[in-house]
Length: 163
Length: 163
DNA sequence: AGGGAGGGTTTGATTTTCCAACTCACGGGG
DNA sequence: CCCCGTGAGTTGGAAAATCAAACCCTCCCT
Image (cartoon, rainbow over all chains, first blue to last red; front, side, top):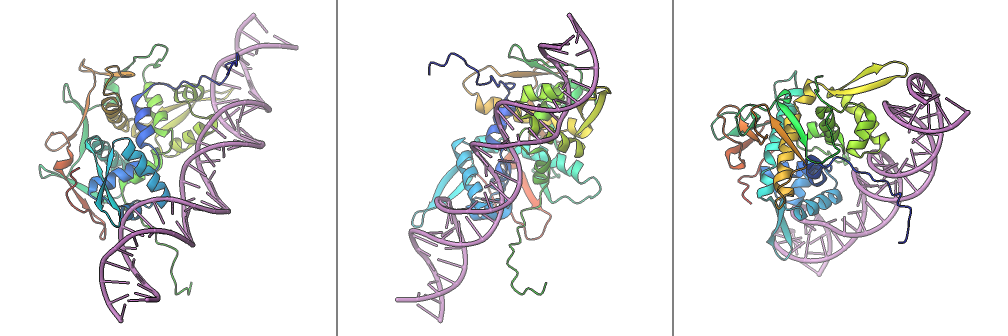
């Protein structure tokens, strides 16, 4: 204490819910864990196999996701103690993000090949091709149609963003 | 070869475009870089300040994103050489993912406070509240309405996924 | 000549990741 | 009883990534 020279570097990145969300689910494997539990795979060893993550890292991610309220950890057997992980409501609401990311990957990382490693069927009977739309008007969200308004004084955006 | 005991561990995680996409944009800060360039901040020092990333890490992320075709690096001044980064078409198509993630963060990480650090205005005049919908039927994508079909034999999904 | 700004690279210490091996608790043969 | 296998992790040590600060170079301004 009693340190008159406060030099510890301000370090104030832009306040932002994207950053906050990524602080929870942006670590390596976290979103893949969510993918698996959304697919219905609830057990540790299954997750290790399907994700390909080191067991210790997976254990640590699971703890974090449970703490964050994105997964639940439920006992399905005492003696020996065994647990299963499931998405909470908040976790399930991240699934659309995964679907959008998957669609992006299918489009841009596999341009030349028609086969996708996984297809999602929507209840309407068609293959799911997700689109992000504006709730108010229903139109697809396109970059040119957006304007950012930072609520924190001092933070700016610098104008048009054409490539 | 001629090694009868094949023990080197197969290590075959589930093939998946989510994983492939995350391999490109899932590293720490990568999506924040995209956020900034989508906001129109194109320069290195601006990015360092707004993101709060170490300069060397940021330099490495920028290289990766340029190589991946998500950003372009364009000279805006020879002598002294100076560059600016902009999203490509592929990069802009990731913006909806960011919007969805931001909305999730606003909803779940700030339940109690009404103020969001940033508001996006859609061209329709309303504040953007993004929804992920099925292109075929237009309905919002909800977990219960989805069925996964792995295209790769041997990969399974284990059934209903209620919390 | 001194002081920025801009766009990085270098250096060295601190964290994470990774992977294999180990544990503990059971269940099932033989 | 002894050994094997499964499930869910924990432990230990080496390898890789991150971090902060310092440095470099080229201009421009005064």
